[in-house]
Amino acid sequence: MHIKVRGGTIDHGQRPLCETCRWSTIVRGTKLNDEIVECAQLSYRNRRVTFPVTFCSDYKDRRQASLREMEEIAWVLRSDPHRSSVGFVRSSRLTDEERFVLEED
Image (cartoon, rainbow, N blue to C red; front, side, top):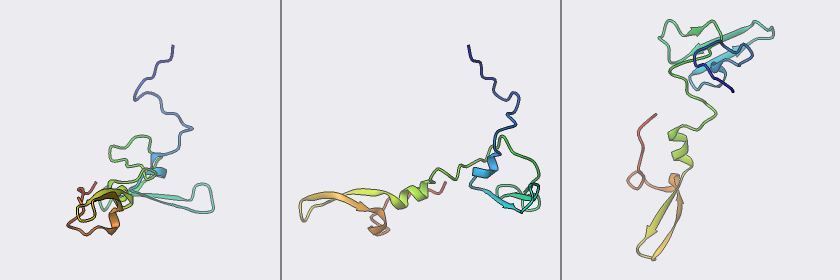
């Protein structure tokens, strides 16, 4: 039987969340300890994170496309009543009036 305890002991081999977070900026130097991590979601004065983060309530995975990015690459099914045809069109080729724009993330 396998039991998972949420919020229990941290896995020290786990990579910090900031490495894949959309809001983080990571600067690394040549030495192992040369690293600066800053978070755009924290207040202006306290942006620097000085420890490896394992949980964050504002975490956004940068490896997954945002809603805006998905909208830009989407194909839209359109019908043309003049030609009696139906087909896909890139959303970037539509005018602003023809596009249904989603709210920002």
